[in-house]
Length: 231
Image: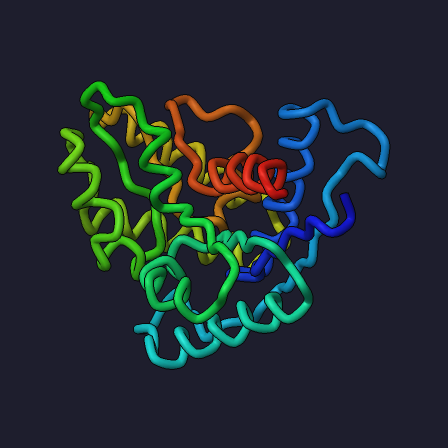
């Protein structure tokens, strides 16, 4: 099925690209038993540097323009759908989806659909820009969930993100991740919503001591499912 080409706009941030592609490959094995190289989908992967900084406000106009340009470059390669593994980029989802003519999967909607319908106390783990945009909170509350999010939690997430982005030492970041998850459980969270692709590099192993819905993983599931549905 070489004509069925998946587009992945990644690199937001750079360490999120490889974990997402690995998740897509895992999903091919899980969903339809892919084994040989030829069984896996062709993917056009664009790792796009964007003007995002952990410690300063975003220039939204520059960010929108950069991401739109990246989407259009992917579209010109002939992809039939695009996955964009970056929660913060979904602040501009409606505008970005309109700037291309191929389907752009929505990882925010996919993540919310994966949370059990029964009421949960959900801790939101996201970049500051995603969290302050209220991208997830209003939808969680509308679905009957309580949201655990405050400045103390965000400061710990910021510290963790800085450790992931600025160092090759995974032990320090892994320790911060384990402490964060344990603290959420102690604060009464029944689930964490992982809404930051940069954290996938440390969140995948070992298994956390709290149930986690990972927006990136839900996007990978939908990417393979949508590719298989292409005619």
